[in-house]
Image (cartoon, rainbow, N blue to C red; front, side, top):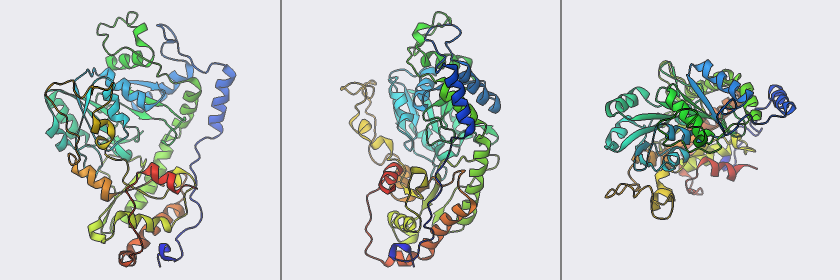
Amino acid sequence: KLAIFGGNPIRSQDFPKRVTMGNEEKKAALRVLDSDILSGFLAAPGKHFNGGTEVVKFEELWKNFYGFKHSISVNSWTTGLQLAVGAIGIEPGDEVICPPYTMSASATAVILYGGIPVFADIDPCRFTIDPISIEKVITPRTKAIMVVHLFGYPAEMDAIMKIAKKHNIKVIEDAAQAPGVFYKGQPVGTIGDIGGFSLNFHKHIHTGEGGLVVTNDDNYALKCRLIRNHGENAVEAYKIEDISNTIGSNYRYCELLAAIASEQFKRLEKILERRTKLGNYLNHRLKNITGLTVPVIEENSTHAYYMYPIKFNEEFFGVSRNKFLQAVLAELPKPRSWDTTPLAEGYVKPIYLTPLYQKRIAIGKNGFPFNFNKGIKYNYQKGICPVVERLYEKELLISPLVKEDMSDNDIKDFADALEKVVINIKELKNDKSLFDDDIFDPVAAIETNVD
């Protein structure tokens, strides 16, 4: 009998909360505190323009391990995206093709330079921007493609790079959720022109906040460093001829966080190895359940399992995704932190449906940059990306449980709960006492369910 109808649940013991700070991080933090230098930056040309000892050390670690020519630390990946967009030269009226299933900053970074996000649909299996959909929205004004490696799995980069080369447009890789991930043997981040990673509190490596931009292009790297640290003060010293987009801000990473990041980076491979083992176990357990679709990893590619995605077929099961979700959650302990939430639905609302795009109000009150290209009305209506809307409204389930703290038995209980509900789906289908809730994203789900 399903727990939602009074049966015994699969598990009552809490899932383990993710623990990320250990003795190494504490020692590193104390070392910086004892030095009395919490930031090594000065906003003027010279020795300290690119940061202090710990910042440089962290940047070198990541760069050398994965073979990137340049790495530039920042105080968040949101500001990292702004560096990347500015560095490749986005100007007012330029169009950048973006996926609609991502954190809002992947698109707002474009708007801050006067660029205009144009949304392409996503691949229904990879959950990343679809090359076929990209081709459909390219115009003479298209200057770049924003690729997001969502949930930790790489986008179809061969096809995307072929399109970019054909149309002479740049590619930015938002790999916030995919550190250390490989696409056909290549580390993500610099398959395109520029990319980077997030270091905020729920990512694989975390220092509270932070990010890292990577590129193999010398000019883009220099522009990023200028934008990071009040570049208007340094263009003469660095002999910059094209000073566009070099007006900077304070996007600098501090010594304390960089020291912690260096220690966490040393564990990244083991973190990814453990997540891969747990993800593979779920893939094996669930792949033969008709009505559920789980990740398929192509040869020489890897998955970081920032989230574990499952596609749910409402028509096959004859029940709504929300009812299925409620039944699974009833089999498992109530979460006490965001990362112990067993399952959530929908991910984020497609970002073109949010007020910024519906009202076309961003910078100022008169519609800039959406009104910059005279005679062009940008379409952000519901229906422009049917795949992502269907995933959001009916199909996608995600779990943050595929994390390094989970034991084999922990992840087995999660799989058992899913299987139990599938086996007893008729019981769920025939009951009329359950009512569908409105769609909710993981943040709302977590806030609702956490004690």
